[in-house]
Image (cartoon, rainbow, N blue to C red):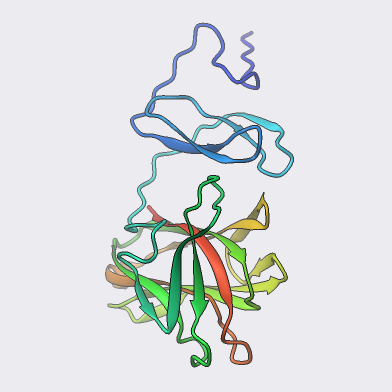
Amino acid sequence: TLFFNFLGGTLPSGLSFSRSTGGTYFDSAGVMQMAGVGAPRFDHDPISHGVRGLLIEESRTNILLQSAALDTTWATSNAAVTANAVISPSGGMDADTIASQTNAAANSDSVAQSVNLQASTTYTFSLYAKNVSSTQSRVELNAINSGSMNKISTITWSGAVPTVSSGGTEALGNDWYRINLTFTTNASDAGAATVSFFPANSATDNSGAVNVWGMQLEA
């Protein structure tokens, strides 16, 4: 019988570990850190700070560009981006604030980026969000060829706490939440698509703001 303890923060004697890229994990203070290439990650719960052990994940690729710099390759519509406005889950001053412009029409304020989708592929969209003043936000993926806009998750804010219509949420501490939405494309979805985040999604309250960091679309 073999027994290995992965809760001590080091690899047990006789074991080796390899990974071709860096990777994130939460340290014992609940702060997101980046491990170097080939370094094992000993993860912790971001709320309780309890040790989770050795973090093992499948390889994924983020196809969004500048996922933590929304004032660069992201297109804005009736929204203002304030770069590096607040401290992100990584502990750095590198999270952006996205604010709907006052009196913008409902559902017209967004930051967006164009991507290319493959058919019959499972994708996960995720972002880290901390509410400022919004009552409802939205993430949306519009597949141009199929005209499909049903890959949508509405985020309803109760103060700092989000509830999503699709997907899931994970609390990270300091009012930050990871919000995710997983979907699988069909043949007609393949090709050009647009990923959008709307800080305000309500016809009655269209001037909200949300802090955002680390947008990802992974396959």
